Length: 450
Image (tube, rainbow, N blue to C red; front, top):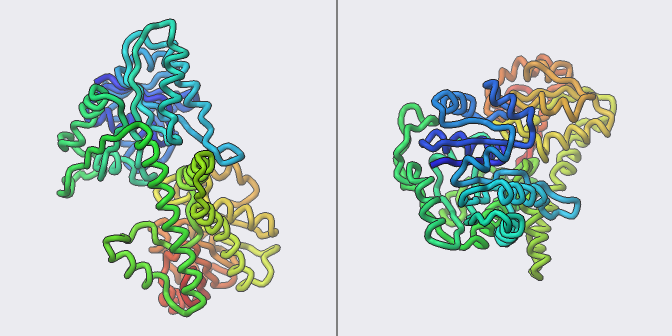
């Protein structure tokens, strides 16, 4: 099928690349002309493991192309996936102006029937507004549009695998034709009839993805409800961690046992600096505002958001308890991305942590395997190290702000000898407290005895 993807950010690029990988002809476009130039030249505007291999491959094979003119993309596709940003407004609502702009573009440029698919995370009932906008803006063309919601459940760092091996594919539709069109698009994934670029040695056996057909409103609500619940789990784990510290318990032991209960599961129970990134904070706020506008008191989620915002404060209390005075001291920071295996720093707790260190008068030297170029644009005043060892040089404290796996495999004897004071403040509970103590470090973390 000929498919157009409007918006070439994290979601759009992964969607376009994976749809091309499973056999479709795909055109990606974006209002950022520089991004399209980078892609056309064979570069990658974002870091996502595996994407740097898949995009050149399908581009060379002729199944993926990039257009700087969005109107060309509208004309090309039988189905159009909307993957534009929906950033938070000052009041927490989702900014849907990009969705409205795309609706006007599709309605005025389309010359044949189109299936218009919401892939962006949007509040419930956005699909109804999208339908109305297409009808209003396209009243002179006579073109028919079908609208569907197909929320993404992609995790940065594992997005290709999440797209190609999902646990469920949710489609919100209003008629059987739209459902069948979407089922045809996803048939290779549902039937596993594609060569997987993620698992070179063969994919693990497992159940086929669940094909979940709902109304458009339900599909939109599913995404916000899912992300908000995950945020709630993280905040709950952090409150238990604070209690564990007071009672002399170990949060790792507690959450490990909790996660063995199939009703709870082990995911999203990691205590630490809290959640960040572009999805969970934004979706949580949007969900709360949607509930309030609908007359539903969702103070439960307000409290989860409040807990998350206090994690940096709690971390600074630990730091002051160890250092006494922060001003003027050399601090090393490991990690700037909001999570490992991505270069995304949007709403990153690590970035907030560095900003707090700057405001406290600390001298900061940071290292991140992928996110330093993006961080330099908003934090030009700090030092950037070429390695984790350089970030630790002469530091009076070394802070772990992102749980990159390679940080757990460092030569800690070398780091201890490089530091002015062997103090580790582990904001992600990445390291073993007993091992760090045996290595000669002062070690502080969340939910464990220091």
